[in-house]
Amino acid sequence: MTTNCLFCKIVAGDITSDTTYEDDDVIVFNDIKPMAKVHFLIVPKLHLESLKSCDKAHQALLGKMLLLAPKLADEQGLKGFKTLINTGREGGQEVFHLHVHVFGGGLPTV
Ligand code: 5GP
Ligand code: ZN
Image 1 (tube, rainbow, N blue to C red):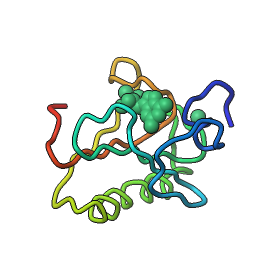
Image 2: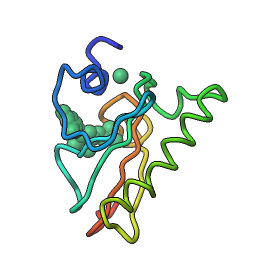
Image 3: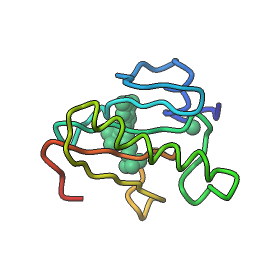
C-alpha cells in the first residue's frame, strides 16, 4: 500500500466503496461521481501510478483488467460500453493509481 493513495486505501478497506467485484489482483467499484448511468472503475490492487508505470511484468494484469470490462458490463446488462484510461495530469488523470473507467447506459462525451 502506498501512503496517501486514495485507491490503495480503498483496496485496504480503509475507505469504503461501492465494490461490485474483487479477486486477488483487482477490485472494481462504482465511481463516486458517475458520468453515465453505469460508471465503474477497474483497479489493480498493486499500486501502479499510471499506464506509464507499467512494463512487460504487468502485461497479464493489464490483460486481466481489460477482459473484466466486457464480463462486468454484461453482468450489468450493458450491450455496449466505453472504456477510458487517463494517463498523467495532462491526460486528465486525477487519481494517480492506475484504473480503467467503464461507462454504459448513456455515454459521456470523453
Ligand atoms: P481519473 O480522472 O483519475 O481518471 O479518475 C478518477 C475517478 O475517481 C473520478 O472519476 C472520480 O470521480 C473517482 N473518485 C475519486 N474519489 C473517489 C472515491 O473516494 N471513491 C470512488 N468510488 N471514486 C472516486
Ligand atoms: Zn495506490
